[in-house]
Structure formats: C-alpha cells, structure tokens
Image 1 (tube, rainbow, N blue to C red):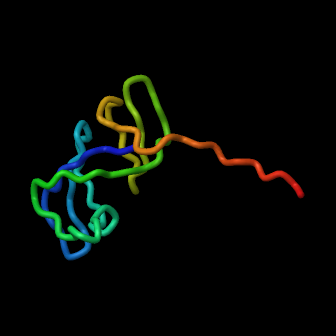
Image 2: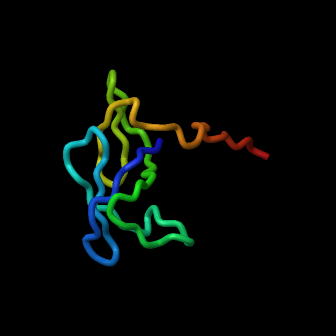
Length: 92
C-alpha cells in the first residue's frame, strides 16, 4: 500500500522529516528509500510516495509498516500492487 507524505525538512544528508496525513507524529526516514535515481534531492514541501506492507485493517483505519508502524484512515492509502499469494512448488 502507498501513502503520500509531505517533506517537512532535511535532517542531514541521509534523512528527511516527513508528515503523513492523519498521523499526528512526523517521521524521519532515509531519503534514498524513496528517491529516484534522476531526482535524489528532495526539498521542503515535496510530495513523496511511501510504500509498505499492510499489517492490520481495523474498521476505518489501516496500519502500514513504513519502517515504523503508521496507522492512517483507510481513504489515505492506495493499492500499489495487487496481492499475489506465494505459489506452491510442485515436486518433480
């Protein structure tokens, strides 16, 4: 699942502080986790896509593992790729 976050400020060369909608606590993340090879420098106010695994769905909220666990309203997340269960291997 993906969540759009806003860059608040650069902490150092490797980390930036981001604000996730409907989540009261700003998060510090490594900038190379989301930066593309073409655009590695992010600035204050940039919108970035954070992607993680869903760990829990509880009514109107979803908890996503973005490094720390982040719980947001269900309408703030987007499906990035369709879930595909692991394929069983058949013995030869």
